[in-house]
Image (cartoon, rainbow, N blue to C red):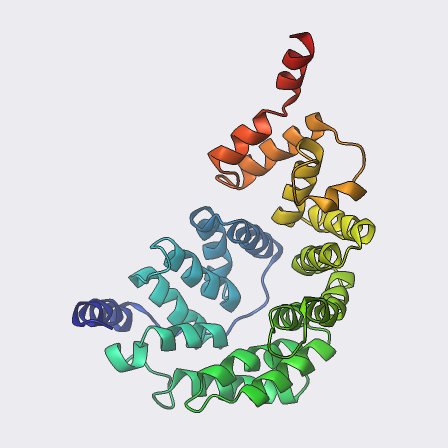
Length: 317
Protein backbone atom coordinates (compact mmCIF):
# COMPACT_ATOMS: atom_id res chain seq x y z
CA UNK A 1 0.00 0.00 0.00
CA UNK A 2 1.45 3.38 -0.99
CA UNK A 3 1.95 6.23 1.48
CA UNK A 4 -0.88 8.17 -0.18
CA UNK A 5 -3.22 5.19 0.14
CA UNK A 6 -2.27 4.73 3.79
CA UNK A 7 -2.93 8.41 4.54
CA UNK A 8 -6.31 8.18 2.78
CA UNK A 9 -7.20 5.08 4.81
CA UNK A 10 -6.19 6.82 8.02
CA UNK A 11 -8.53 9.73 7.22
CA UNK A 12 -11.47 7.39 6.54
CA UNK A 13 -10.81 5.28 9.62
CA UNK A 14 -10.39 8.32 11.83
CA UNK A 15 -13.86 9.39 10.75
CA UNK A 16 -15.13 5.92 11.55
CA UNK A 17 -14.01 6.07 15.16
CA UNK A 18 -15.82 9.38 15.62
CA UNK A 19 -19.06 8.65 13.80
CA UNK A 20 -19.91 5.03 14.59
CA UNK A 21 -21.71 4.07 17.77
CA UNK A 22 -22.05 0.72 19.47
CA UNK A 23 -25.53 -0.61 18.77
CA UNK A 24 -27.50 -3.57 20.14
CA UNK A 25 -27.46 -7.03 18.59
CA UNK A 26 -29.79 -7.80 15.66
CA UNK A 27 -33.42 -8.65 16.25
CA UNK A 28 -36.25 -9.99 14.11
CA UNK A 29 -37.53 -7.65 11.41
CA UNK A 30 -41.16 -6.67 11.09
CA UNK A 31 -42.90 -7.39 7.78
CA UNK A 32 -42.17 -3.96 6.29
CA UNK A 33 -38.47 -4.05 7.14
CA UNK A 34 -38.17 -7.65 5.93
CA UNK A 35 -39.79 -6.73 2.61
CA UNK A 36 -37.41 -3.79 2.26
CA UNK A 37 -34.43 -6.04 2.95
CA UNK A 38 -35.55 -8.58 0.36
CA UNK A 39 -36.01 -5.87 -2.26
CA UNK A 40 -32.63 -4.36 -1.40
CA UNK A 41 -30.93 -7.72 -1.69
CA UNK A 42 -32.68 -8.36 -5.02
CA UNK A 43 -31.51 -5.02 -6.42
CA UNK A 44 -28.00 -5.55 -5.11
CA UNK A 45 -27.95 -9.00 -6.74
CA UNK A 46 -28.87 -7.46 -10.10
CA UNK A 47 -25.89 -5.09 -9.99
CA UNK A 48 -27.87 -2.05 -8.87
CA UNK A 49 -26.14 -1.18 -5.57
CA UNK A 50 -27.12 2.49 -5.53
CA UNK A 51 -30.81 1.68 -5.99
CA UNK A 52 -30.56 -1.01 -3.29
CA UNK A 53 -29.20 1.34 -0.61
CA UNK A 54 -32.47 2.97 0.60
CA UNK A 55 -34.13 -0.44 1.02
CA UNK A 56 -31.14 -1.92 2.85
CA UNK A 57 -30.96 1.14 5.09
CA UNK A 58 -34.55 0.50 6.21
CA UNK A 59 -33.64 -3.05 7.29
CA UNK A 60 -30.33 -1.94 8.81
CA UNK A 61 -32.04 0.75 10.88
CA UNK A 62 -34.20 -2.05 12.29
CA UNK A 63 -31.05 -3.84 13.46
CA UNK A 64 -30.38 -6.35 10.66
CA UNK A 65 -26.65 -7.15 10.53
CA UNK A 66 -26.74 -8.69 7.06
CA UNK A 67 -28.35 -5.54 5.66
CA UNK A 68 -25.59 -3.49 7.32
CA UNK A 69 -22.92 -5.64 5.72
CA UNK A 70 -24.48 -5.34 2.27
CA UNK A 71 -24.76 -1.58 2.75
CA UNK A 72 -21.00 -1.65 3.21
CA UNK A 73 -20.67 -3.72 0.03
CA UNK A 74 -23.04 -1.44 -1.91
CA UNK A 75 -21.21 1.72 -0.88
CA UNK A 76 -17.86 0.12 -1.66
CA UNK A 77 -19.03 -0.83 -5.15
CA UNK A 78 -20.07 2.76 -5.80
CA UNK A 79 -16.37 3.71 -5.74
CA UNK A 80 -15.30 0.89 -8.06
CA UNK A 81 -14.57 -1.62 -5.30
CA UNK A 82 -12.52 0.92 -3.42
CA UNK A 83 -13.52 2.13 0.05
CA UNK A 84 -15.21 5.17 1.50
CA UNK A 85 -16.44 6.42 4.84
CA UNK A 86 -19.97 5.11 4.38
CA UNK A 87 -18.76 1.60 3.56
CA UNK A 88 -16.46 1.49 6.60
CA UNK A 89 -19.22 2.83 8.86
CA UNK A 90 -21.59 0.07 7.80
CA UNK A 91 -18.96 -2.67 8.02
CA UNK A 92 -18.15 -1.56 11.56
CA UNK A 93 -21.80 -1.49 12.62
CA UNK A 94 -22.30 -4.95 11.08
CA UNK A 95 -19.21 -6.23 12.90
CA UNK A 96 -20.56 -4.92 16.19
CA UNK A 97 -23.71 -6.92 15.48
CA UNK A 98 -21.62 -10.06 15.01
CA UNK A 99 -21.39 -10.19 11.20
CA UNK A 100 -18.14 -12.10 10.49
CA UNK A 101 -17.78 -11.09 6.84
CA UNK A 102 -17.87 -7.45 7.90
CA UNK A 103 -14.99 -8.21 10.27
CA UNK A 104 -13.01 -9.67 7.38
CA UNK A 105 -13.68 -6.55 5.31
CA UNK A 106 -12.39 -4.40 8.17
CA UNK A 107 -9.27 -6.57 8.20
CA UNK A 108 -8.86 -6.12 4.44
CA UNK A 109 -9.04 -2.37 4.95
CA UNK A 110 -6.47 -2.35 7.75
CA UNK A 111 -9.02 -0.86 10.15
CA UNK A 112 -7.15 -1.92 13.28
CA UNK A 113 -3.63 -1.26 12.00
CA UNK A 114 -4.29 2.10 10.34
CA UNK A 115 -7.14 3.55 12.36
CA UNK A 116 -7.13 1.75 15.70
CA UNK A 117 -10.61 0.43 14.92
CA UNK A 118 -10.17 -2.96 16.56
CA UNK A 119 -12.34 -5.70 18.07
CA UNK A 120 -13.37 -5.19 21.69
CA UNK A 121 -11.08 -7.94 22.98
CA UNK A 122 -7.97 -7.62 20.86
CA UNK A 123 -6.44 -6.31 17.67
CA UNK A 124 -7.24 -9.12 15.22
CA UNK A 125 -10.47 -9.01 13.21
CA UNK A 126 -10.11 -12.51 11.67
CA UNK A 127 -9.50 -13.95 15.13
CA UNK A 128 -12.61 -12.14 16.39
CA UNK A 129 -14.60 -13.62 13.49
CA UNK A 130 -13.22 -17.08 14.30
CA UNK A 131 -14.09 -16.84 18.00
CA UNK A 132 -17.61 -15.76 17.09
CA UNK A 133 -18.24 -18.37 14.37
CA UNK A 134 -16.52 -21.50 15.68
CA UNK A 135 -18.91 -22.19 18.60
CA UNK A 136 -21.91 -21.71 16.30
CA UNK A 137 -20.40 -24.07 13.71
CA UNK A 138 -19.60 -26.69 16.34
CA UNK A 139 -23.23 -26.41 17.50
CA UNK A 140 -24.39 -27.30 13.99
CA UNK A 141 -25.04 -23.92 12.33
CA UNK A 142 -24.47 -24.47 8.56
CA UNK A 143 -24.01 -20.75 7.88
CA UNK A 144 -21.26 -20.52 10.50
CA UNK A 145 -19.61 -23.63 9.05
CA UNK A 146 -19.53 -21.94 5.67
CA UNK A 147 -18.05 -18.74 7.10
CA UNK A 148 -15.21 -20.74 8.66
CA UNK A 149 -14.06 -21.71 5.17
CA UNK A 150 -13.22 -18.05 4.51
CA UNK A 151 -12.02 -17.27 8.01
CA UNK A 152 -9.37 -20.01 7.99
CA UNK A 153 -7.78 -18.36 4.97
CA UNK A 154 -7.62 -15.03 6.85
CA UNK A 155 -6.19 -16.09 10.21
CA UNK A 156 -2.52 -15.47 11.00
CA UNK A 157 -1.57 -18.98 9.90
CA UNK A 158 -4.02 -19.96 7.10
CA UNK A 159 -5.21 -23.56 7.32
CA UNK A 160 -6.57 -24.85 4.00
CA UNK A 161 -7.30 -28.31 5.42
CA UNK A 162 -9.55 -26.91 8.16
CA UNK A 163 -11.15 -24.54 5.70
CA UNK A 164 -12.07 -27.36 3.31
CA UNK A 165 -13.28 -29.56 6.17
CA UNK A 166 -15.75 -26.89 7.30
CA UNK A 167 -16.86 -26.21 3.74
CA UNK A 168 -17.67 -29.90 3.28
CA UNK A 169 -19.48 -30.00 6.61
CA UNK A 170 -21.52 -26.96 5.63
CA UNK A 171 -22.52 -28.58 2.34
CA UNK A 172 -23.41 -31.84 4.06
CA UNK A 173 -25.55 -29.83 6.49
CA UNK A 174 -27.56 -28.45 3.56
CA UNK A 175 -25.86 -25.10 2.94
CA UNK A 176 -26.54 -24.53 -0.78
CA UNK A 177 -23.90 -21.82 -1.29
CA UNK A 178 -21.27 -24.24 0.01
CA UNK A 179 -22.47 -26.99 -2.32
CA UNK A 180 -22.24 -24.59 -5.24
CA UNK A 181 -18.76 -23.43 -4.22
CA UNK A 182 -17.53 -27.03 -3.96
CA UNK A 183 -18.82 -27.54 -7.49
CA UNK A 184 -16.93 -24.49 -8.68
CA UNK A 185 -13.74 -25.62 -6.95
CA UNK A 186 -13.96 -29.05 -8.61
CA UNK A 187 -14.77 -27.55 -12.01
CA UNK A 188 -11.69 -25.33 -11.87
CA UNK A 189 -9.29 -27.88 -10.32
CA UNK A 190 -6.90 -28.77 -13.13
CA UNK A 191 -4.39 -30.41 -10.78
CA UNK A 192 -6.56 -33.11 -9.19
CA UNK A 193 -8.21 -34.44 -12.34
CA UNK A 194 -6.72 -35.98 -15.46
CA UNK A 195 -8.92 -34.16 -17.97
CA UNK A 196 -11.83 -31.77 -18.42
CA UNK A 197 -14.43 -34.53 -18.38
CA UNK A 198 -13.27 -35.73 -14.96
CA UNK A 199 -13.46 -32.18 -13.60
CA UNK A 200 -16.96 -31.68 -14.95
CA UNK A 201 -18.15 -35.04 -13.63
CA UNK A 202 -16.71 -34.24 -10.19
CA UNK A 203 -18.47 -30.87 -10.13
CA UNK A 204 -21.86 -32.09 -11.33
CA UNK A 205 -23.09 -33.76 -8.07
CA UNK A 206 -22.40 -30.63 -6.01
CA UNK A 207 -24.15 -28.33 -8.49
CA UNK A 208 -27.04 -30.79 -8.75
CA UNK A 209 -27.58 -30.93 -4.99
CA UNK A 210 -27.72 -27.15 -4.72
CA UNK A 211 -29.86 -26.83 -7.86
CA UNK A 212 -32.38 -29.39 -6.62
CA UNK A 213 -32.53 -27.44 -3.36
CA UNK A 214 -33.65 -24.38 -5.36
CA UNK A 215 -30.40 -22.39 -5.59
CA UNK A 216 -30.53 -20.50 -8.91
CA UNK A 217 -26.75 -19.98 -9.43
CA UNK A 218 -26.27 -23.74 -9.11
CA UNK A 219 -29.02 -24.34 -11.68
CA UNK A 220 -27.09 -22.15 -14.09
CA UNK A 221 -23.80 -23.90 -13.30
CA UNK A 222 -25.37 -27.34 -13.65
CA UNK A 223 -26.75 -26.40 -17.07
CA UNK A 224 -23.27 -25.32 -18.19
CA UNK A 225 -21.73 -28.57 -16.93
CA UNK A 226 -24.34 -30.70 -18.69
CA UNK A 227 -23.88 -28.80 -21.93
CA UNK A 228 -20.15 -29.40 -21.86
CA UNK A 229 -20.83 -33.08 -21.22
CA UNK A 230 -23.08 -33.17 -24.28
CA UNK A 231 -26.32 -33.65 -22.32
CA UNK A 232 -28.18 -30.77 -23.95
CA UNK A 233 -31.76 -31.88 -23.26
CA UNK A 234 -31.17 -31.93 -19.52
CA UNK A 235 -29.10 -28.77 -19.73
CA UNK A 236 -32.02 -26.92 -21.33
CA UNK A 237 -34.31 -28.05 -18.52
CA UNK A 238 -31.96 -26.58 -15.92
CA UNK A 239 -31.24 -23.33 -17.74
CA UNK A 240 -35.00 -22.85 -18.03
CA UNK A 241 -35.37 -23.43 -14.28
CA UNK A 242 -32.53 -20.97 -13.65
CA UNK A 243 -34.33 -18.38 -15.77
CA UNK A 244 -37.62 -18.97 -13.96
CA UNK A 245 -35.78 -18.57 -10.64
CA UNK A 246 -34.56 -15.15 -11.78
CA UNK A 247 -30.96 -15.96 -12.71
CA UNK A 248 -29.82 -13.38 -15.25
CA UNK A 249 -27.63 -15.76 -17.26
CA UNK A 250 -30.49 -18.24 -17.52
CA UNK A 251 -32.70 -15.50 -18.92
CA UNK A 252 -29.99 -14.46 -21.38
CA UNK A 253 -29.74 -18.03 -22.68
CA UNK A 254 -33.51 -18.15 -23.24
CA UNK A 255 -33.29 -14.85 -25.12
CA UNK A 256 -30.38 -16.02 -27.28
CA UNK A 257 -32.04 -19.30 -28.18
CA UNK A 258 -35.18 -17.45 -29.25
CA UNK A 259 -33.38 -14.77 -31.30
CA UNK A 260 -30.14 -16.29 -32.64
CA UNK A 261 -30.31 -20.05 -31.95
CA UNK A 262 -27.98 -20.98 -34.82
CA UNK A 263 -25.00 -18.93 -33.64
CA UNK A 264 -21.79 -20.95 -33.30
CA UNK A 265 -21.31 -22.54 -29.88
CA UNK A 266 -24.98 -22.57 -28.98
CA UNK A 267 -25.46 -26.36 -28.77
CA UNK A 268 -27.80 -25.80 -25.85
CA UNK A 269 -30.29 -24.19 -28.22
CA UNK A 270 -30.62 -27.49 -30.09
CA UNK A 271 -32.78 -28.71 -27.21
CA UNK A 272 -34.84 -25.52 -26.97
CA UNK A 273 -38.40 -25.17 -28.28
CA UNK A 274 -39.01 -23.58 -31.66
CA UNK A 275 -37.49 -20.07 -31.65
CA UNK A 276 -39.88 -17.19 -31.02
CA UNK A 277 -38.07 -13.88 -31.77
CA UNK A 278 -40.98 -11.81 -30.44
CA UNK A 279 -40.80 -13.53 -27.05
CA UNK A 280 -37.01 -13.28 -27.11
CA UNK A 281 -37.08 -9.54 -27.73
CA UNK A 282 -39.71 -8.98 -25.04
CA UNK A 283 -37.50 -10.83 -22.53
CA UNK A 284 -34.42 -8.93 -23.66
CA UNK A 285 -36.10 -5.55 -23.19
CA UNK A 286 -37.32 -6.63 -19.74
CA UNK A 287 -33.77 -7.63 -18.78
CA UNK A 288 -32.38 -4.32 -20.02
CA UNK A 289 -34.95 -2.43 -17.96
CA UNK A 290 -34.26 -4.42 -14.79
CA UNK A 291 -30.47 -4.63 -15.21
CA UNK A 292 -29.24 -1.78 -17.43
CA UNK A 293 -26.17 -2.44 -19.60
CA UNK A 294 -26.65 -6.21 -19.50
CA UNK A 295 -26.20 -6.28 -23.27
CA UNK A 296 -23.40 -4.52 -25.14
CA UNK A 297 -24.16 -2.32 -28.12
CA UNK A 298 -22.55 -4.91 -30.40
CA UNK A 299 -24.77 -7.68 -29.02
CA UNK A 300 -27.89 -5.55 -29.32
CA UNK A 301 -27.05 -4.74 -32.93
CA UNK A 302 -26.35 -8.40 -33.72
CA UNK A 303 -29.63 -9.45 -32.15
CA UNK A 304 -31.32 -6.58 -33.97
CA UNK A 305 -30.48 -8.18 -37.29
CA UNK A 306 -32.75 -11.05 -36.23
CA UNK A 307 -35.55 -8.86 -34.89
CA UNK A 308 -39.13 -9.48 -36.05
CA UNK A 309 -39.12 -6.12 -37.87
CA UNK A 310 -35.92 -6.95 -39.75
CA UNK A 311 -37.19 -10.42 -40.62
CA UNK A 312 -40.39 -8.91 -42.06
CA UNK A 313 -38.41 -6.39 -44.13
CA UNK A 314 -36.24 -9.18 -45.54
CA UNK A 315 -39.28 -11.25 -46.48
CA UNK A 316 -40.86 -8.27 -48.27
CA UNK A 317 -37.68 -7.22 -50.04
